[in-house]
Length: 339
Ligand code: DGY
Image (cartoon, rainbow, N blue to C red; front, side, top):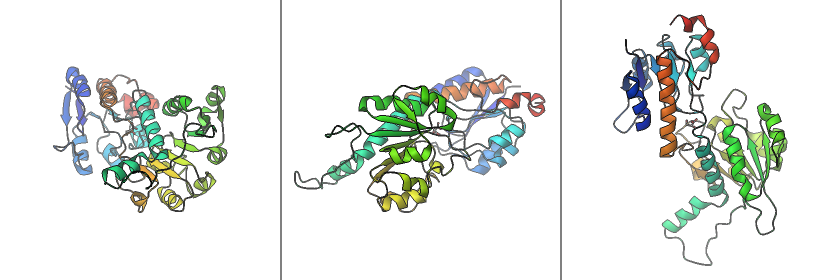
């Protein structure tokens, strides 16, 4: 019998091609403009599927997974997988995959663009021009923060939290700006210490020394609210926080309050605690640049992510081990072996 692959979002062309060639039975489920199905619709469709391919941050909670314990796999379209209840999937012998690698450079580009836009107030200055407020010299000046050494030739310090693939790609981008680079990632301490021109720092030390703090860690129990009131207090008043990882890594209410009080100079955010909702007060702030979770959003990268997710889905539908497995222990479990 042909295996059934469920895509509950508007998958991109190159991924669709992979699925078409696999000769699986593919079901696309989304609104005319790519709107995602409701939880109820998702549960109904998952009951009729062998493999589910969720879209990045699309929630796949316990109730969705329990609705079909016979699933052969969940192939997430995204590198982060905090949207999926991995524990339940593992208990039921369901392999879960993600799409690492292909989005590294694109996400690092966005983090860097956000850092620069926030430091130099680019969106605020653009709004000023477009709204006709620019009347030439003598008016408002958008004084920003230097990223490079500036007029007084003092190198700035970049603090990278999370030194996986994306954190490392951000570090490479900093080279042209002659920055001092420090990083915190307990799992990568040795790697960081081996890298030329950078140093390992514990979190508090990094926060106190950085002119820019950029977050690149996954969302886990340990990283939830990693940056809260206390950590924001440790940062320099001139520092800028950039978050392109996951919203809940930062206590957003605490961040709004720190920005309102001028405890730090600014924040560039691509992710939020309750997407697409913003914490009260966030959008009224002058010193923020806010983006709608577009870290990996270029045509080429999103197409490649679709290809990787589709290949993982096809492999799992065929009972083969996929390339990007998150919970490899399932392959030894009785629940998986009995499927
Ligand atoms: C990712 O791949 O994790 C992106 O943030 C999209 O969810």
